[in-house]
View 1 (cartoon, one colour):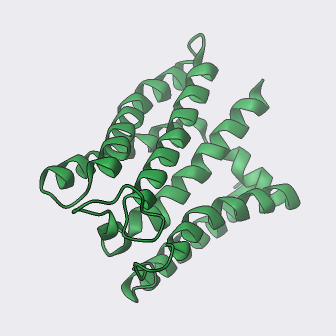
View 2 (cartoon, one colour; view 1 turned 135 degrees about the horizontal axis):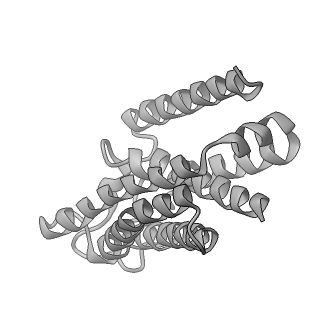
Length: 203
């Protein structure tokens, strides 16, 4: 067993506890905001975990060691799960989500999720230009989140929902969909950050 192996178990325990906390808070309606108030709890759930990771990475050699010990092939392949974002387009078709959120979020997730297996193979085979492909995948993934978060916030019924119409993105604040912005998005953002750090470290 390597030195980082016990620490990896600690990381997974943190991830499980994080997911459990988000699930409890979602069940309590913490992320279902009053339309008269900006969706600050939801935004905090997205932003705070990646920021905490960056702080921990900067301050802790153990966190850096565990993060950089993760297999880049696995980190890349995990982005393939993003294809589940295609359900946003289905929900839009059913009249449950606005196009201003569903199109950027759904199409962006489908592109990233479909591209990820090809990049994972390139990493595994060390094909020429594989580093550029990893960087492109992760930059696209982060830009997808920017568009999805922005579209969701501006399509909601809060005071900053300037694009809201008859259908809003408010169902993203309630279970089961609230798990996506409050856990899935920040989790994948952390994976993007680690992947970019690993590519930089291999240069």
